Length: 450
Image (cartoon, rainbow, N blue to C red; front, side):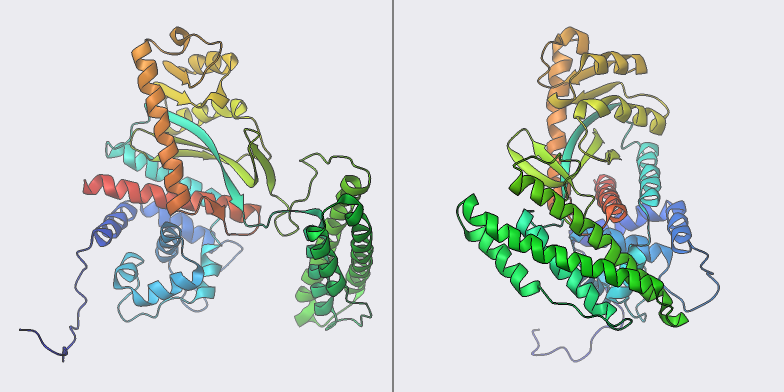
């Protein structure tokens, strides 16, 4: 019988029969089998001398870890995560939030999730991989390694836009300093923005040169004002309650003023002297100064960090490397296999790499580590007989290596590896590891359900 309205709502939520709900329950079962993971998160939350027995009751370590996985798995913002943890019965059950408990707020989620360092994420990842080995899902005998780029959350850098960023940020900080010290300065934001737009729209270098001179002039004046205000804040003796805020503001002014000096220097070198600036010395963002410049096969320039990942036959990500700078792929082939040996207690029997990892020295070193078959795709100058025991094995491993491209695409499309939205290098590494952790737990759950 079909009714117009339902007069009485059920008192107990009925578990959803949707496929994703079953996956979340399986993911919860995987995490329940790793109690040490929540203990590691708990230690991280109490870092800095926080007393767990005092103060109001916050999110448990289990809730923080599962909320982080839910966020990365769905690419939610903190606002969206707070909504779903307050509204969705399935995600509340996954994160261990009781039916009568209030969901955490956006600020609470941000404060707790950002407190987990990358080292904890990596340790939990190793536990999950070893758990998969114990379940017979992954044995680490056949692995593949490749690299990709995770872009940083910055705009396309140009000299004029970086100078405009410096002016507007320094003026904002100086305005904040007016609450603590007397400041008299000229706000150059309007003229700086106008010059930056004009530089972008004019067509020739002759037209840009006087505009750059004017933009550099106002940037230099704003930077000198910021440095003067920072010195006054350091010399100031504020009330004890405001002392920490004043010191932090002075530190911000000094940091951005130093970055502004570097941006002005590289602008003068590029625009007026016609000299190139080494990529290791360039500032491509004053907000994310750790960002590297990555050129992919002379086709595309990306701004972020190169990451190296190793996956197994199960599809699980077995390892992740985030080196500083833009190292050549060939320099990390041996270390990636050595990390697999440290993880599983033995080297993999078979390993395959993209063509960028090709090196006869790498082949010799990997064979000495105990790897039976080492295949470099598109290897030039290395006979197949030296890499693999037969042409058939070579072809099988070469086809197996192609599967890592799907894994990279999966991480970029579904777990936020296309662009890191967290600020700072420590947060960047945590973000990358958290995405890998969420992907591994989901894939392990799907293996168990299958």
